[in-house]
Amino acid sequence: MSDTPSFIGNWNYPTKVRFGAGRIKELPRACEALGIERPLIVTDPGLAKLPMIAAAVDSLKKAGLAPAVFSAVQGNPVGRNVDDGVVAYRHGNHDGVIAFGGGSALDAGKAVALMAGQTRPLWDFEDVGDNWKRVNEKGIAPVVSVPTTSGTGSEVGRASVIVDEATHTKKIIFHPGMMPGQVVADPELTVGLPAHITAATGMDAFAHCLEAFCAPGFHPLADGIALEGMRLVREYLPRAVRDGSDLAARAHMMAAAAMGATAFQKGLGAIHSLSHPVGAVYNSHHGLTNAVFMPYVLAFNRPAIAERIAAVARYIDLPKPTFDGFLEWVLELRREFKIPHTCRELGVEESRLDELSVMAANDPTAGGNPISLDAAKLKGLFQAALAGKV
Image (cartoon, rainbow, N blue to C red; front, side, top):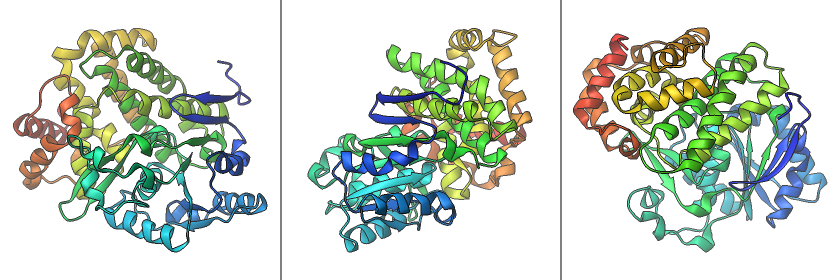
């Protein structure tokens, strides 16, 4: 792929993606392709105030569509945000959702679209067993997703992570029909991201690729996508952090984020198992939290993944193509991005480790870790991350 900001692509994997700088102008056509005439734009309060949302609303109106904006979405969206979005959707007689923003807005928007035509409560569709079969598929509204960060890859995902405030747990809401029908992936929308958010979201994309590649099981398609995603992060994330106007770096990171979310259908692991309860209890940024826990989980999983990580180190062209070289590079990347070294800096309290460890063991991502997990092992990981001992 040419390292210029001018490349553009129409992809049909894993869904229809309009990729390239300036393609936000095609938002009305993306809606029309799904038969949406009265879209509800689901975004967050910060984005709702920015010119990009006003411009999107204006372009939709000029195309003869009737949009409205719902922006009551928290940084880690909660069930109430989804419920309020559904009320807005029904009250406005909308016929589709534009999920517009970072991972939180994308997750909330997809969940609103799912719940628009359901009679059961949201938590009945948690990704446990075959709960997804409870969904009335005809009630799922069509979704256009528009990412404005390069991290979660939720724009190409079939699930949403929503906090259950009653239990202070992050729950994964899943149904295959939650996959957006159209994606408008315009890297120009990420140019204004501050360096620290660029770094944190980029490390989220990297965590998805890394854990997918290391997850047990046979899925060479996911492995290949994850491997190339990690190479793109190594090459382009430092560039995007150093110079937010580097459109080529922004574009490659947007691709890497989508690749991570496509690959992790194979599985995730302890990075996410630890991160989810911390994010739910302390409202920490998900990508940042993943980056904090990453080296501790790598060291814990070493007996099971050393050879695979050495292969990654060779592919992404590290100076020391070994497990140790890879771990050293991750630690150096965290230092370069000023990511906290301990989870204590995220607010994690030693007095709550037993509670957090049980929550982590119950998180569905725990099952994808290369080494089996239980609450005791996860508590050991928390203790290492508190002490800063890799």
